[in-house]
Image 1 (cartoon, helix red, strand yellow):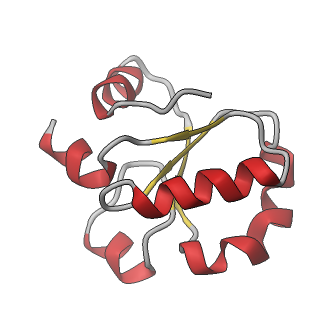
Image 2 (cartoon, rainbow, N blue to C red):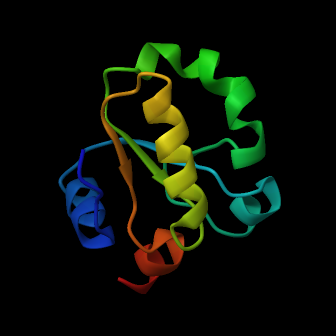
Length: 99
């Protein structure tokens, strides 16, 4: 599935959509700033949490980090485990906040 731009995500949120947003930054980063409605699962703990996300396998999941690197890794990991609609937030929260 194609990745998502910060502008597209903000447009969808403004329209009242509540997509599943997974923040794979460290907990302290999430505490400093976060995207409304996001769930924080640091990338290092994601392999242990995949079973907890099983019910979301067929739903769109938007993953993000600070700049896009860690979330690209998270997208690959989730895709390997059968998640079919994972999108990376291009530019991460940095680009999102700059919009």
